[in-house]
Length: 157
Image 1 (spheres, rainbow, N blue to C red):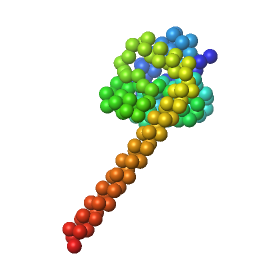
Image 2 (image 1 turned 90 degrees about the vertical axis):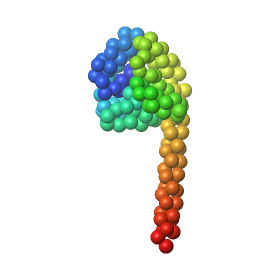
Image 3 (image 1 turned 135 degrees about the vertical axis):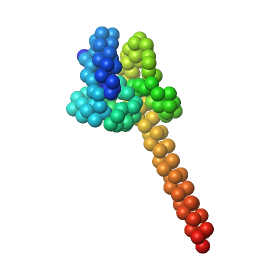
């Protein structure tokens, strides 16, 4: 049987996703309202798909998707925040914009289940691009800080 983990801090959405995915895909669906518990669930069990809200109160949905991919579980991120969707799109993370039509959720989930290896590769590659961008920004910030210190030192002299 297909096992799906739904991670969303909105209990009503978790319950709706559970019903829809069970009824339309025949999946056994487990829900978590926090990323911390979801991570523990992923470590303890294998899921065929993780459906993850990108904005969770206790952890990054992107980090959770990366954990899922590293545990050989495909992931689909969701969000209703335009700036978050833009970031997911910019780095190439598989995502679905809230609100969505039930049929779109079921179709995306079904497609990902059929192409799990491709989804896992995509999530890993997206995470790598995002980490590389974060490192580049960190390096640029450090370089700017050093230049500002050098200028301040020259001005004091």
